[in-house]
Amino acid sequence: MSTENTNKIVENEISLIDRIEAQGTLFGHPKGLYLLFFTELWERFSYYGMRAILILYMTKLWIENGLNIPESSATLIYGFFTGFVYFTPILGGWVADKYLGQRNAITIGGITMFLGQLILFSINTHTGLAIGLVLLIIGNGFFKPNISTLVGRLYRDGDNRKDSAFSIFYMGINMGALIAPFAVAILCNGIFATKGSDGEILSYGYKYGFLAAAIGMAIGQILFNLLSKKYLLEIGTKPTKESRKPKTELVDGIQKEVAKVPLTLIEKQRIAVIFILTFFVIFFWAGFEQAGSSMTLYTDKYIDRSFFNTTISTELFQSVNPLFIVILAPFFAWFWNSKYGSKLTTPVKMSLGMILLGIGFLFMLYATSEVITEGKGDHEVVRHKAALIWLIMTYFFHTIGELCLSPVGLSMITKLAPVKLASMLMGVWMLSTFVANIMGGFIAAFVEKLGAATIFGTIAIFVISLGLLMLLVTKRLSKMMHGVN
Image 1 (tube, helix red, strand yellow):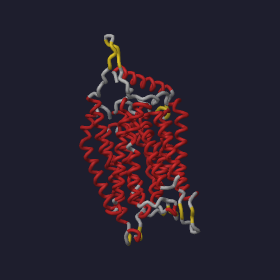
Image 2 (cartoon, rainbow, N blue to C red):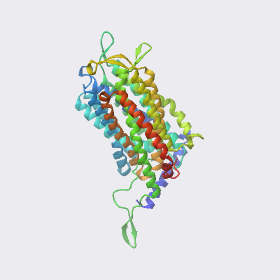
Image 3 (cartoon, helix red, strand yellow):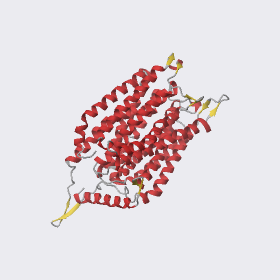
Image 4 (tube, helix red, strand yellow):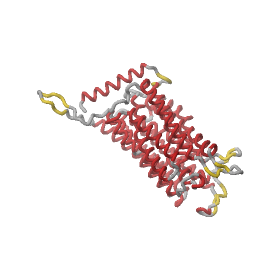
């Protein structure tokens, strides 16, 4: 891309931001942020509604309206699915940067995910599961990196509101994740469940949980396509990378190809920081994503879920983390802009996130010490279950760790990445979750063989050690970021 064309992109961005700022702000941020907030909310409602029941849908018996897949196989399927959900964004980001623009990519992704949820609803077989999950993987690849990139493009370079904006955006993600498990639990365990005379559930209405997820996806897309022109103007409507045809200019009467401007040393070092932090984050998500697999199965079997003479559905525990996010995100949004929070660099924040995740798993380790069982495998009898408080404390520390790492990481990409590579590098960031989820699937598959205490304890020690290592290299990383905090 020629210097002239690069300058035009930057000038157009600044002009658009001027016009967006002229629309006024809401709680100190552009109104377009809240459109993206609600679009992401409904997409996450769709994803987390499906995720809350996925492992249970796969492992329950056919007679219970499940797919009767062995736990060890189901956790691997879960890991590969949630992993590839975060692999395809690097492809979707590249296609959006080069050909589609972020807005078109978000719409294509949303429609594809809507179709995937409908397949899960209408075809309750192993084939339907495979087709539905593949469509969700493809759709998420188009959607996920591009909506996050749009959040960053609402602000000028160096705007200190970015970390705060991503904390608000992240609250939208988690409001959807909070509502979804309640909705699917009511449908799957209540309205569409078959119960015996004693009130015990004989079969579950999982298919209607997938239908609710499809409806949520549709609502988000309708909102986005109706209101984006008003609140986002032209941001994200065109690709930012050069076209495949070489740029030429007239030199001495001859049309010659203009040489592409290479990345500067500063840009290269900033991109290197993205890759280094992405590597560390792999291990955070490998531990964190146990929530949907090994921790869900452990909760179903070994956690005392009774509360005031009622038994809490296992699916509802998927709402604990997003509930804490919604409660704590406004505090973090304020704190990152405060006198003390603004002094913390991105690498420091992220290293604290790693350490807090490890502390959370120490509570799960304590929970395993309370469980008393007899027999093994199908003959196992649970004589005493672990107290609910240990699971809640685990989610609490995991949530604080997530708030120190994930929204800050999203903000970091938009600040460090060159404009022409923004969506692709957002995809690289999400690539960490691809590797992490596959790794997490294998970890969960070993719980039955090695024991939950061994797995939870090993994760705790490992991620705390990595967090301390990150703290040791933060000064070097901050130097490579060249003034970006």
